[in-house]
Length: 162
Length: 162
Image 1: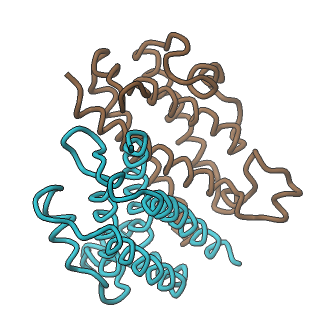
Image 2: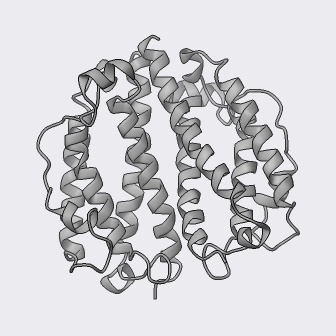
């Protein structure tokens, strides 16, 4: 591998590590355990799992990697806080989670190093010319941190599971 | 900047973003607020702040960037759980936090892209030959995720601050 390729592989590996941990945690919990709140009156683990699923599904658009698989998740897990509307079942979230991450990883590997430094989909070509740090790689690193952030909260909630 | 340099700059920027958020949060809290637990009977915010300070101080060694500034923190914040021994004051942690991150950032910028792909300090030259992903960059990405993980927990605890 060239140094460029090693850099990208490290970023994808870091992403994959967090995604694997979140998936393994959530799949190990039953419905009752997934209903435990991360703090009194706050998000349930199931909601956070759906939230990460929706945000990661949005990466197809932000990374300009094709059509999203589950745009319907945004209305439930991004635009509304927990307890506003009924959530999908954990089996449904698990299925979306798996499909989205399998597809994302496979598309990630189609991007060459220089494509990771191209603009992301939320920035115009003009804006990108002013600020080249708004690239796909920055999105990947940012979403990895975001997932770690919520994973830390899920792990706390797990301590309270029956 | 060359692509190599942009990759590294993105990773450092991601690190710096999390470090800045943790520092801003902790500096905004008073002693009473820093004593709020992230979960009943679990770590206090102040402990987590010290824990991240100790882990990040350890990065001087792991990244082979010279002497650590505060090796004494490990006994308090890594080898012992919260409430085992009295903690330093928040002013002391704030001072260490600041000194460590200023020095780390300045040393990060002395490393060229290919140096980020050299082995980290916890792996032998022989082991690294078998597995070249155990490089400095992987440590930086891993520590960034680790900080995000605890930052998510601190933000939950902040909801409970008086």
